[in-house]
Image (cartoon, rainbow, N blue to C red; front, side, top):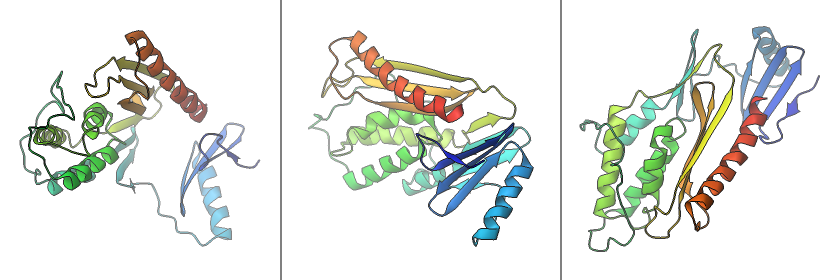
Length: 254
């Protein structure tokens, strides 16, 4: 039986013969192989090595800044080392931690003209780094998403919010996503919206998160494309975006 390409993920291939499942993900010249039997994985490696010049690097431990820990309990992924690099570059690697990434009900606007400007280049670099950190940190999505709206002309007040996010990271460096071995395979999603919370454009914020078992695998917090006329319309727009992600996620785990 040949490999079949996932319809929604062109770099992921799947091969199933009876109960034996083999999944291969391709990134540039790297292959990531997983399956439910070690024999199938070894057979695939031998077959590929006989046709191509390849190196077997063993179990995945590090990938694009993501640290992967595989053990008998399951799989843990995190970006602790990358988070430490962000703090060191910002000069906050020894700062005092805080328990929340952003104050509740905090109002920020682009029209804070009286506030002093800060270095936009450095601010944008920090935000870009934080957005890359979001791949394993859903708890930062909302705070980083809100701060990203002001990265073109950041003010001193925006810099204080950035500092609080970094202080929060200092206290949560070891946060990770854990996928338990033999855990639930149920896909569950939640969506919500905040109506008219953007003082500059009147747009609402869409948020959704999807869990595979007890672990989040997909999340989003962003401004909606259009200005809703009611909170009900904002909820429908958020639910629509969540439905799109639900279809994609369900096809990946089926």
